[in-house]
Length: 584
Ligand SMILES: [Zn+2]
Image (tube, rainbow, N blue to C red):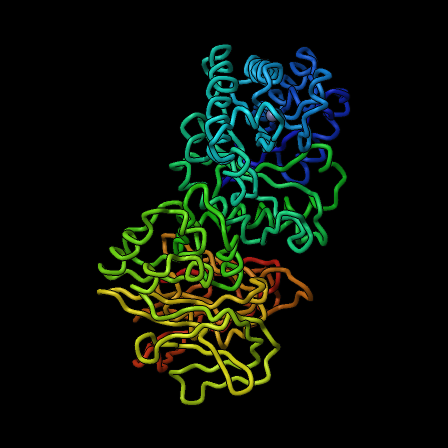
């Protein structure tokens, strides 16, 4: 029986810790984790970086956890010390394997067999990349690109040195590959979900965003949700869980947000890395509390849904722009599958699909709505782009301090904090700008519409620093979100995300950034006869009970040379808290 009804909580324990662990200490530490979070499953690691945990010792740990009704699985990390003099010549980041070296190939096979002997489920920690550029690898690569070479190399290693040997030893073993949090670099380093999803039984997703501003992977908090959604589609629904750690998490909310957003994506498992780092750690108690609350809230939700952001396999460019948009209330869900209808966001990464233009035109012709970023426009082949829009980047940058909504007779906002945008020009009355921004006597378009067949394509101007999306007034975004939304429902509020589910529920979450404080937010609903109920909110003596119906105010405003009718509700959101609403 799991501690939570929507997910299992699991903890990963590395070999170096298990190697020197006494069973009596493990029992004490188990009590801590059980008390503050609740432990459903452990991943015990027999091998990491030359450390092999003794089998008998491991058997003692396995028996201990089974006696506590904790599910047990294994794991290993593909890091290896120098195993002969020759290896010193290889420059291996973090001691990862050179997969063209026969000794190392033999070694990883032994590791995989050793784990499969002891467990029916084995996960690979995310050091299963290769960046080796030793002379052997250069020779083996030949005329291929590194991307092509590493794709084939890791297909071979995955099939022949990891999965097959493991299954030969233990036909029941399920092999799981954990993909790192840096999706945009997978293909460069041999990680190929498009290939490996079919070799491994299940996949797993790294959701470690840590301290976004400082960690070296440039990952916005929203990734803890969005990468899981991408992986769900990328693996044909075989994503098994999410995984985050305690590192570089200041303040406490940096840690907790990883857990919240992971949970919002509704994984089967949430893994906490790693065992000994959790013990007596102040991060753990609030996580356990919040998991309990999130679990109750998720009982009311369906399957996560949103606006697809088309991020093909093995692509990069304008990395995480969809995540920065997600943090400002654009309900984006990245996917390697191009949608057939509805809405889609295209970024520079989308251009990796060689058939993108045919897909986009067909999508627009049949009435789809596409949103595109400046990176998509700038890197598109000129003839293809010109067939769809008159817009082009001049190459100049504009520091904008005012905004103008072209449909609002009084739609002027002056003296805003400066934000740097690309200057985009377009042919008057061919493309139509719904929102402008500028300074002095000059301005550029922030949201530009083109039509094609029955469809529309909107160019959304994203600041040169995508983090500056949080400095654009919500008032200005209100000229974008009436169309750039999911299901006619959106939220206005700085640093507020909206997470939709397919049963007409949605979560609002105010991110903890900078000087966090409660924020006003407006929920917009473009539906007649809508009823809005608050199903879950932070307990407060000032608020009435949960399941409260919110008063909706009718609103009609000029938009896109016509008008839009909406119903709106004002709410106050505490940063770092989550709220669930239902439409009926
Ligand atoms: Zn090599």
